[in-house]
Image (cartoon, rainbow, N blue to C red; front, side, top):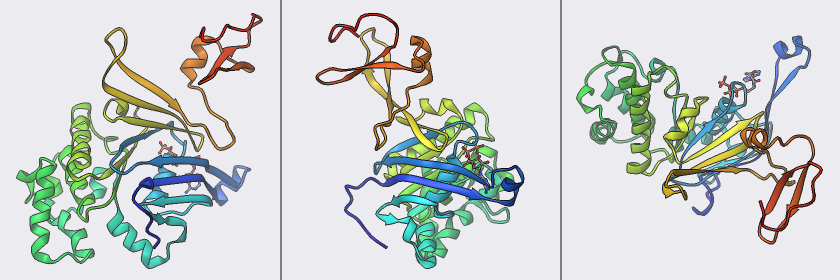
Length: 308
Ligand SMILES: Nc1ncnc2c1ncn2[C@@H]1O[C@H](COP(=O)(O)OP(=O)(O)OP(=O)(O)O)[C@@H](O)[C@H]1O
């Protein structure tokens, strides 16, 4: 495995492509689906990031690749200095056991039903070869961090959906992964319980320093994290950064929208922006000394500098 200096982002995807070729697709007439179409994404160590997007936009495909369960058709993907495109079978197993932790939407599928919460958390530690006497203490620590230590000796059937999901986060954290991937972790839960799960993911991020990537189609997740990246058609498009402590001129909290400029200079403007100004087809770009303005292509004289 290649280990790179730590200043590299924790996750680096460059021009990532994933094409599915199936008989089912062939019967529908195309033969292939391009789930990821040149996706670029960088996630810094210690970030808590949400990846949102409509159904079919490629979120789960990306997650499967980052989890080491699937491989890209083209492009590069690196996690914690490991080039996932170059992993042999043994390295892939080690990567999945130690570098990455995964939580799935179906709460029950994350846990073994005949083991207690504590035993579920201890299980992956055994696979990774952690000495037996250290497993119990670490499992309790993690259950405590998730606010669920009181239920350590209960089996999943005796836990609510939200409690099961918090145990699942503890299981995913068992081997101190550098990256925690959560695929629709609140998909089966009500709003209050969902907020508890987000709080548990934030605790993993702030207390353990784990980089956390939450994949969801729930736009409300943006309120729970600092950076939200939207995938559209297998490419990252817009990003929203929240500045919780920063007030706008009217005293209101602000959020800034960022969009990703790809290698050839393309960017996608948020639909709300283009709609509100009636931008369509051709727009006029004006280069100022430190920024670029985008104008509707109406028949009016060019704006004076700095007048936007
Ligand atoms: N195993 C597969 N075989 C063929 N096509 C697939 C396969 N998995 C996903 N796809 C297709 O790839 C595209 C992206 O799917 P993906 O599941 O990654 O999207 P998603 O954003 O996670 O959607 P959702 O929010 O519904 O889970 C879709 O068009 C989907 O039909």
